[in-house]
Length: 389
Ligand SMILES: [Zn+2]
Ligand SMILES: [Zn+2]
Image 1 (cartoon, protein in one colour):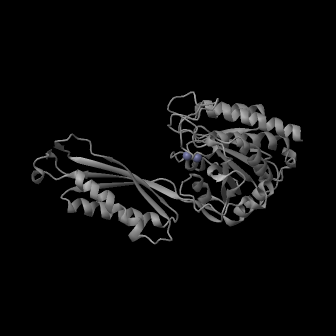
Image 2 (cartoon, helix red, strand yellow):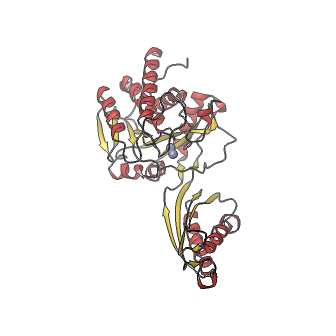
Image 3 (cartoon, rainbow, N blue to C red):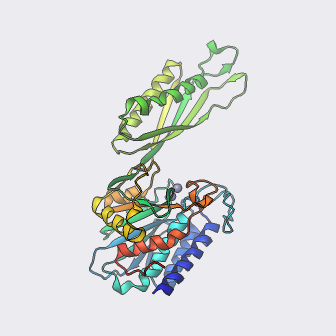
């Protein structure tokens, strides 16, 4: 049993590094999808394409027990890799900086192992290889194309460098925040820098808006209601003697409670337009909702925690990680449809690249997680697992 396990894990680690070398951006996961489908075909696992580059792998579909789904995401990010790893990206400007290569490889390791133990599975298992997590709403498209049909419960995970290896979080309720972005276009009237009285200065108005927006979290929302609002870009390019016509402000927000979205959106609108008016300019407000908070269902979350404890020991649940994590996940779509749970599993083992945050150019997925999480997934699916070696 152990020899077979080791062989599967080695194969999955090689696959992870192979995928890492050939990252593909959101909705462009062509070669990744092909590689996954090739592997499933070789394993004799029936599969269907879903959501363009997504794939559903089917195991033990005739079994009477509850039908569980396990999900792994596949896409990479527009980042130039600086990890220095031998398996670094061979595509300039594209990098697996969120570890979705590792999530895919772990799901494939589960495919190897569950296929070898298919007869022992109590119920059907569907493997969701999902494209376009990084802002592409891939989960939504998977659902629209029937990925959750017949499924009773779904589990997913994310490696998390801010948590120590061997620790994890999988709370009841919100595990990751909801998010959204905004664009504020401040329009005034440009002109000569020596004649401000003949202009309506959008630069000054935009500056005031940036400052005023910071009152939302500190003064207008309850402190218990964890919210982040960041202005990340101010674009009013001009030259030293020219007051421009427009200034464009962009930024993003994170919310822990779904109900905050409406309040926050109307505050952004109210403060931006009123401040712009006070400076003799106008402001056009655009708000783009992205993902809702990822909210675990209590029963699957308890089950996930139990399997994490079986794998990592009783100390696995991190007490020092503030929740929800303010990053966001499109796994939230699945949890709005059916019961399920999402865990963040620590990857920081002291090596530099495993402690760098996700989306950092020096980050690398911690391959030691593949074996550990495959074991957790196998337990969730009801398959036997070998003792730790
Ligand atoms: Zn990411
Ligand atoms: Zn990610």
